[in-house]
Length: 499
Image 1: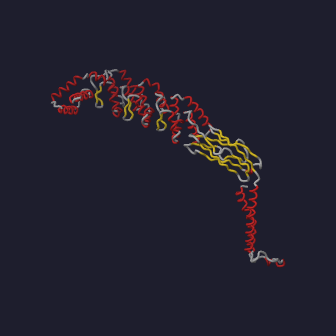
Image 2: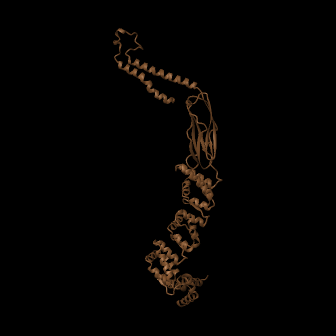
């Protein structure tokens, strides 16, 4: 394109944009361009007139201002208005001024009556619309869209011509998605949809809450994605994959489940029956269990299994195949058993005995395992108290470890015998301790006596009082010590020997 053609196009575009009236700055700029091409003022004027005459101004005004425009325009907010459509456009583009314009409806009534060629019925309908909503923002939108049904919908500074365009932006930015819901919750989006897209009106709910907002979206298009927290998921399987990798994701996922938000999406995906079965199970669990982190994690695990039935279920293993002790003596027996999670997931474990025998117990009867939350393995203890068992009697039973997916039995064989070696060692130990104790008493007696020998050579009964040592109080103390010390030591011995 040569420079003259470019100038002609520039002039034409400006004339169309300004509807035939160029501003002084427009004319100065165009003249400078023409002078650069060697044209004088006379030639520029002829060129401007030629282009002006080539434009079908009537068709252009029909397109921009409507075929029902009036000949004498009204001036509002610096613009010429010749039709109702143009009035709606000007009001929509000047929101702050328009809110003032619409405060009492006087200007609106006059302008609508004039621009509608004195159509009083139309003016009355518009005034009824104006008076029907006391919220200034909704009234502004109702009036603008009633005047011009081709106006876009604004969210922030962005404008959109279709509902699909709005939602596409929402799937890119979560904050913008929340802005869409905010406009839905206060009824602004519905005003636009009712006026511009009446075919979608049947999908709009009567209550503007978030679940109904999601229902509207997925009734509109069931292939739309879903937000869990701020993260977007295209397919249900993507949620399962995320949950099996990130433990922190389970909390927002459970919130979406509890609020019945995720279920809305899945039902539109054709998974309504699966979700109904899941709701029945969760209702039964919540009826018998108090809210807890364990219950929450368990519900998420069951939800993932319902969402993807082919998912690998949690599997556990135990560290022992059997327990066999056939010569238990006096000391209590503690046999550690490690229960470990072998796959991904969250599983509840129940441990018990197939027979109730006094003196035989397990340290833990209920616990949970998870590769993402808490522990992936737990050590429990199989406890045997020989004092409560019959000597030389063989006990056979099983340790039962149960989950929703597995049943593990560990056979147990036990027999207690008389503790010969333990009894002999106890006799030797306490005999030695007794000897040491009485030896210490004898040493204390010797230390308290003024004689150097162990015993006096003779006892003179005629002078028995004279033979009482001067420090006889020490002898009394030693006597009391010898009597009281065994009683003081006995509780300690009971604790040590577990008597």
